[in-house]
Image (cartoon, rainbow, N blue to C red; front, side, top):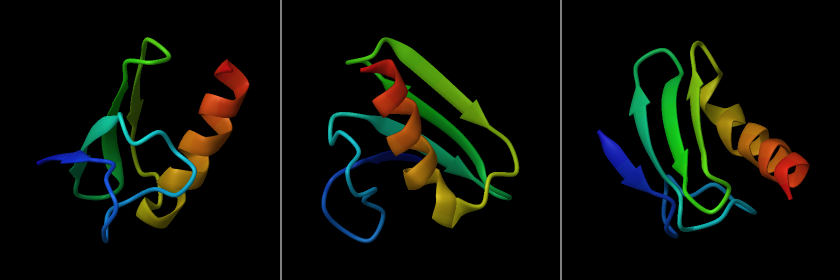
Length: 62
């Protein structure tokens, strides 16, 4: 399923609202960040930590 990073229960704080992502079972994510021209694929990442991971990644890319 694909999600937008808009305000709500699946919103990642301090991460651009223009990204979108697919969330799968077991912490599998595909994140598309067109602003930074990057696609991120994770496996077995704790779902509660993906927002923090994306914050660190986008900070490194800026």
